[in-house]
Image (cartoon, rainbow, N blue to C red; front, side, top):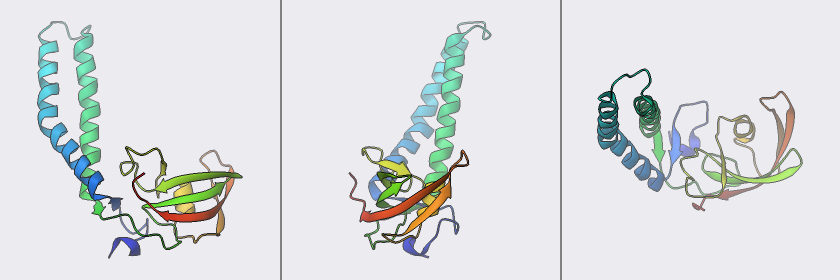
Length: 169
C-alpha cells in the first residue's frame, strides 16, 4: 500500500520527509546513547550528595530522565511507523503532508496536515490527521464543506479553500 492510498484508520503509519526522518533518527540515537549516559552520571553525582528526600538535584535529574525516556519511546514508535517520502503533490484533495487553507468557524486558517515533527523549523501550524479537524477534512476536495465536533462539544464548520504541496516552509 502506498502513502497516498492509505487512510488514517488503516494503520499507525506517519508521513515524514527525509529531512525530518534523518533529524529524528539522529535525536533518537543521541538520546538513547550519550543522553542516557549523561543523565545516569548526573543522577549518580546527585545521589552522592546524601539524603535523597531533600536532594533537589537528584529529583530534577530523575524528572529529566523520565522525560527523556518518554521522548525516546515516542521517537522509537514514530520512526518504526514512518513512511518516508517527499510531501505528496497536491491533487486538490486533503491528505497527510499537504498544506490546507480552510475557513474554520468563520476565520481563515493555513496549516499543514500531518505530524508536528515534519515542520519543526517552520512557522506553519500543524494539525494531526487524527485530530477532530484533521479527521473531518481528510479526503475532502477543494471547495468541500463539513463540520466536526470540537473537544468542548461545539459543532464547528469547515470549508476547504485550497490544498497545496508542502514545501518545507
